[in-house]
Length: 240
Image 1 (cartoon, rainbow, N blue to C red):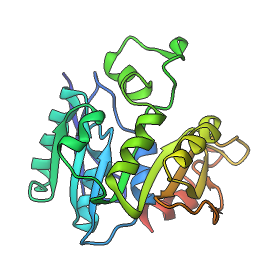
Image 2: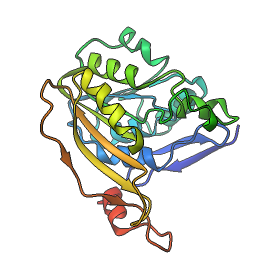
Image 3: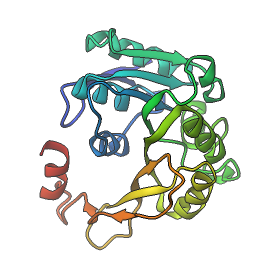
């Protein structure tokens, strides 16, 4: 195990990560900056990994937060980060399969759910790596779109919000699944590495509602200039 301690850009939080395990990256940071909460609300972060999203939001908005992560090694790292950032009173780390969340929380009790889910279907075997930790985090081996929709719909209060970061190439498929569970997509923000590149990520906000109209698409976010420096747009998104 080779641990690192890294400050999260735009937040007063540092997290432990391990070079031999799945490591959170810019997609989680962008998702954390996409979310808005009120101080009295309750947050659940599914597929929480090393805890980056939940810890950042718990610290920023001072909300009660539950992290759910199936990998014991990542859950232990997240607990170290909880302790390091003195967030023990706000954040609870739960090491379990997502299909067990209702053993810990009640139906219709959560205001906001965040999730950086596996992007690749279980059928995408050609993308599997040698790392079990990477495969569980990136492939739908234990958590798929169906379980995401079912879990979020069960936990969220009416009009509660689900925030996601995902791949555009599976957006239509995801939208159909979420709508089946009364979680229509309400807002989208597409992320492009460079100005001329196709979008490779999309930030998503859903609302638990029977109403499917009212989609808002925000102006695209470009991450890098031609010289590989961060764009002013990204700096404003993270630090503004």
